[in-house]
Image 1 (cartoon, one colour):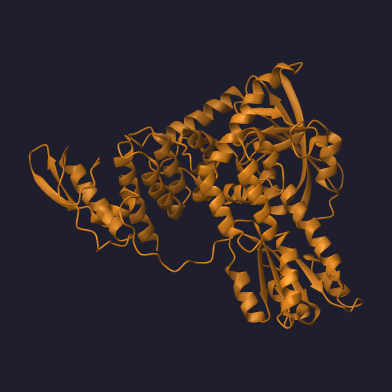
Image 2: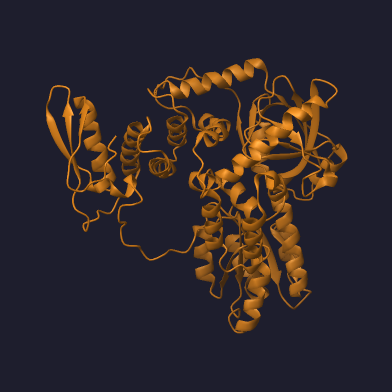
Length: 533
């Protein structure tokens, strides 16, 4: 790999001819994605093949990837930051802009609950914005005068989670609520409205559980290049933690995350105070305390994990790895206190009807938990959190019983009730990537489902290992870096894979053994992305 950045010379590398051609192709593809820096003198390298044939390649197109010391391209106009939380509040009222002072105060109150708040006074603009949302859920506040016509238009959109009618006339809209299940209620005062939204947002995050489910593991597919989308998604969660643990950490990781959070929450004084507190007081020993609080950190990390946003996962990796190491440090001491070889814990929550249907169709299959999973010793506490079935037909109330075989379970877990924000819940945290077999699903009552999960057996674990080897078999280099990028591509997430490879080129040392392979993967990914578009 080229390690010198002098702008006047060339360097010679002894390479075989096919690799020279491949590098030439890769650089051509990269040039389509990056702005050339015309103010910097050209940089070139002469590559000499084994048969002494020479070829010169212009490396100026690669400058943005090679070194942070090289002058950067001129800054583009800053875009509005993307939404880093799972929820968006939209307020539609044709008179919303009439009193600017009241509007400013409303926005401040609502941003304490959900950071992203959009206000509209025109139905068409609001409808278009709702239609543009792909990865978030929407809480819609709407004035009574617009409710009857607009709710019919958006009610069945999957991104709309709840609707709140804000109107001073109390006796209207009862029939509308009966026929439209997403309407939470009608509210005549702002205090009652904000109180209800606060409760609903807390419930949403309490019931957050990103999972991957597969019915079976099959490594005998006809394709020698790609695995199934579901298997790739499942293996993502299995390999993510290992990948993050092997990435080099920098002394600036925390500062970078704090800066990113300040940018996203720049209009939110409530969260800005929490960010300042985090910057001042956070250390690895209190990671669990921070994670179990409903704040900016919990929301950013869990959305990144749910949407598999690799850039934000990597920005948060110092915290994720701190969490893992701390749980692991408690794990060995914790299991010594247990009386037998099995531990049973519980978790209660609501799941969307669609998510629950995936579990029902995969009984005896595998489930992987894509986040740090909070459970409890107490079945009573879990049943309380599961709810009473009142969320139907959109949500089902689920009581999870999880039986952990201490000799088989690979990922660490620990009792954290003494250090958690919720000590009274007798909390046990399972590390990200924990996987189980779905033993059975049966009704506990008319309103509650019982889902039994058990540790993956030795045979199950062997199958998972086989799948990992299957993923690696077409990669000459066995590095987890390359394997992780392949999984992103197998999932069809070429844009994410492209960003991932570009980030690796800035993170890995210039003399790292995988650099050439990363360039190769980046070039082929860019080519695939262009074909898809």
